[in-house]
Amino acid sequence: TNVEFWHKKIESNIMRDKKVNETLLKSGWKVIRFWGQDIKKNTDFCISQIEKVIEEQKHDKLL
Image 1 (tube, helix red, strand yellow):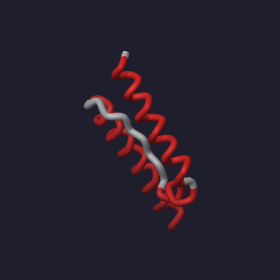
Image 2 (cartoon, one colour):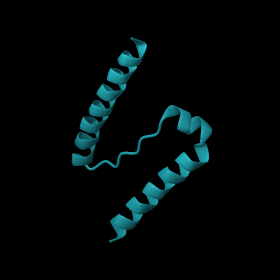
Image 3 (tube, helix red, strand yellow):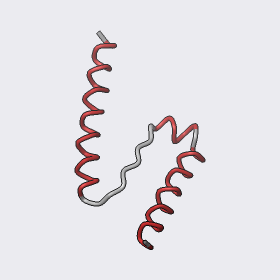
Image 4 (tube, one colour):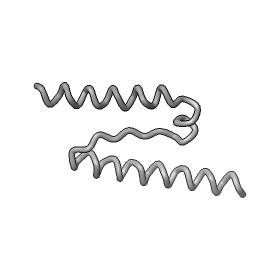
């Protein structure tokens, strides 16, 4: 059924994202993920999260 398809699809996407996150983190990257709908509906929140990470990275480099 359509519900089964989407459940499997979402689960496989989550597993893929976890693997990608691990690879990026091991390479020194900071990973932030947003759903497309969140970017559209909560743009200011998404921007503030990005700014927060940038500030944290700046702070960490100063230490």
